[in-house]
Image 1: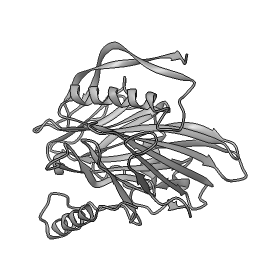
Image 2: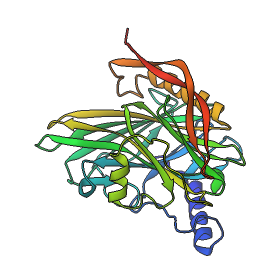
Image 3: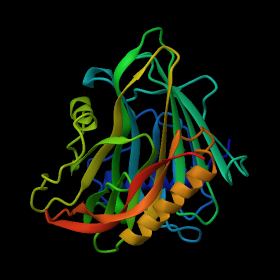
Length: 336
């Protein structure tokens, strides 16, 4: 296993500063139980990947190489069919690495310049096992993360939702942060309104059915997380309180049914950009890599997306103002 000891040291120093009040991250900390990680560091975005359902907590670096800017961010996996059966990789220790599922990153990889692998389960909560694959390439501003969700129980599981809780503190702090959703790209994102830096999470496989955002600590328990994951797409009605500039969002797919032994596949991209157009361009390149790599090795859907021009999408600013941003819409065409 290739561990980056200096990243661990940096994380430890960051936590020491946090506890001493030296950084503006009061009340935040890493998920419990997530001790094993490796870093995708071949591209311009470096991301720490864990083997229990979380990626990039206190560990997104962009742009790289050279002196990498740190962005304190979470992208924690969520999976379940009710608030009492929600496996939550954020604050709860609900996932467990399987016996042969410890995180590994191979460089060079078979599919990409760096191939990642991990496997974990929901500790028997519902009987779900997740095999996670990740892919990164040199000089790219994204990484791909693919999931195979397998029902290893003896029963059919219905009403399932899968997705992520995302807390991106752009440019190392939550100050001046805003959130938006690009419906044409199925991508939630956050931006620093002063520096212009954008971080996004895009779905590449699996139709997004829910997106919700709010002030930090809005989604701090299983009830609120599952409510956001299962309540549909953001409709533009949310206005953050005055002065709130620390935002988070929940995005996912569902509901879906898995028979015993059945598998559901999801694909995502963690993307960075210096502006919204740059983020969108990098996101489109992530889609191209996804298609060219056969879905980071897990296989593509029966149909593939292509972009066509469409009007702007709503952007939510932390000031409460609404704005429009250009995007390209999705149409579907049969695979040739």
